[in-house]
Amino acid sequence: MFIAKQKKKENIAEYLLYMWQLEDILRVYDLNIDRVYDCLVAPTNRSDEEKQEARYWYDNLITMMKLEGVQKEGHLQINTNLLADLNDFHLQLLRDPEESAYIATYYKTLSFIVELRAKSENRDVPEMETCFTALYGYLLLKLQRKDVSGETQAAVAQISNLLRLLSEKYKLRDVKEENDFLNGIQ
Image 1 (cartoon, rainbow, N blue to C red):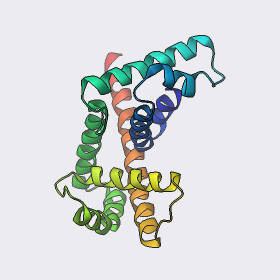
Image 2: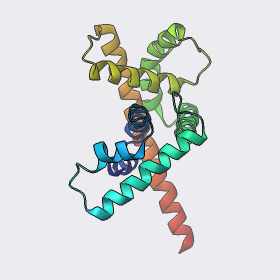
Image 3: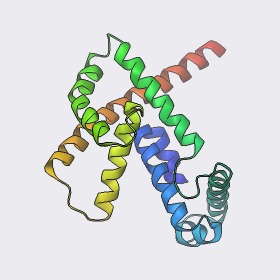
């Protein structure tokens, strides 16, 4: 919970990947809050109050997963909505002539996106979903200590560059919107 809060503030792409990983971790623990608490919360050096707050947060995620029918696979609606927002923002950046650095990074990444989509069963997913799915797959391979080809590493590096830049732009947009809101109140 505490990691998620920090990642959400600092890097929205890392946050989304973290939340996907957390969905899988909760599945490993059979969506059992007692097992999650014993393995993920209890061993931490947090106060009892923070541990209870974390238990409540994990329990809410588990409840949402059950209600949304993503106990075995898939993503929580909040994560799906965030991905859609990131994709919309990505498309907005591509239409903005002042975003030449982002657009250039996108075009350096496009061949990898096209190649990944060609290999995918579902070729109609938005580009950002393709990028996040590729990075998440790469992270899973690394966690399993599997060999990763040089081609895959090059693709992941370029996709990471694009998502890092998208995250920076997203954070700046949120700060600007917050400042605009606060200035409007005064």
